[in-house]
Length: 250
Image 1 (cartoon, helix red, strand yellow):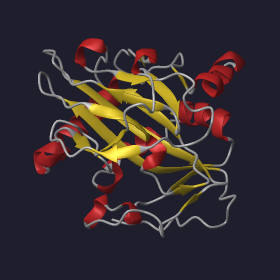
Image 2 (cartoon, rainbow, N blue to C red):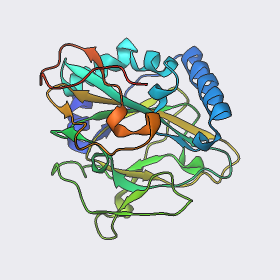
Image 3 (cartoon, rainbow, N blue to C red):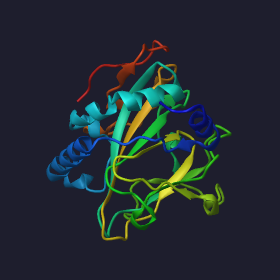
């Protein structure tokens, strides 16, 4: 469970690194399942935006009771999982994740999500760890983004120049199995991996069920990667909004 100090820090800074570590067996399972996924879908070598559409193993990680306890302390007792993704940075060629706010992408209203970032490998400055701008979530607004069509980035949207101060960035360095939690509005990104070691990270996206995953405003696409076709999983409690669609999609 999170301490009161950790909860206060999450709300004031927009992120925390709790005193928690996934068991080695879970990390081995994540690595194995990700390797199988990439073997079938080589296009996901760097980034898979929707793990749950391909392998139910990852849903078991999302149901870890200790993780759910921490998320519930932040979001409340009624929570749903709406996505899980994998950011892989192979040694020497891992792509940069441009500075952005997650909420710019997501069809959740009111906009609310606690993201759990799991370090599958050691994650540090040398191999492109996650970096955040502490406190950048406080005004609860989205700054201006623009498209970046470069093949050297994992995501297509980035904050426009002048929308944040990169000098204030704080690296989140984690050992394998450690996690960080961050707010939907916090500004974050990461550098490419130019080291000789891989850096893999798995994300879990939880929302309070007072919010709605709005498929009408979700970005359309083909097949299981379409945001309109994501399956929403009730993890704890009830759907407070009464409007969320939990139909299983594949």
